Image (cartoon, rainbow, N blue to C red):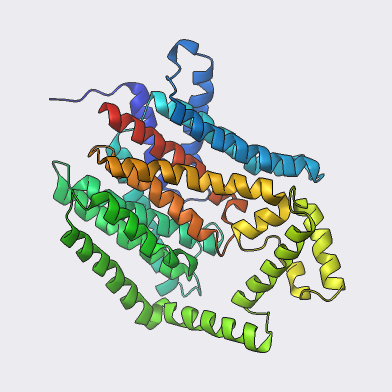
Length: 411
């Protein structure tokens, strides 16, 4: 039977494919598909008869988007920041519009998983070229190297998640090879970037996938994949050309020097010092926070008083999503951030326990997205970057639409 897709479904599928496929290999590549989806969502607003029927759980996702937007926009306004600072939080509204469209016209599953794998493979090859042939110290592409490495890792882990979906397809061998290559490419891109934070979350991702696919794939195959991931990481760690071993050893040395000698002018030491300044700020203004401008003024007073090292004046954020948010938006902002990650994670894990075969890969992908961002936020203020905002909110919109459409058999 030939499946005939409507033009709207084709449009969604192309946009979703592009969103992941060119996300890191083209300057602001994640914006291409996102803009297409947002424009479609805006157009749909003017066609009341075509609106999707929203369930309570759809409203929950939209409400989480709105609350996080309001806490961010509220900080901008109350802190006296320039109106241009509303640019990044406005992307959250655009993602909500994209979700509105996608709930009505979800993409094809092959477009989603194919885009993920294509993006991961290309970024892995490109990062390897930069590191091994161009001789750069750390691959970074068109964005900050930590953002580059962690988003690459996310694409790799989502490719790994897609292996469960591949097992249910007619061309499962082909899809398995493509998605396995995506996993290797995404992990390789992260390694060549020198970003260490993304690797901390791998055990938690593997736990999500073990929970999701134990019945479908079998515990033995899951164990084999887990061993493959560990072996790959080990090979990259010990191979001198990747620079991974030296980066890990440097991190261990930084920790030792900070606690035993008080040295802060290192990568890890500077982070610890930044976190101290954030703790001071939160203690001073725990409910609403100080705002970005307010925090800078307060940080300078800490420097003048000798309570923190002067090198902090060179940093715009605190390299920890949770501490940075607590310092600048207080407990209100921190709760909004935690809800943004934990509420969908709870929804996705509950779905995984219901064992609906068609929905399982997308619920797993949603859980992986949440777990990954929670990990990335430990050592980087990930959502302070445009790439971090765009990838999280639009990826959440895409995955959620696939969760919903898989329940009706349209994914």
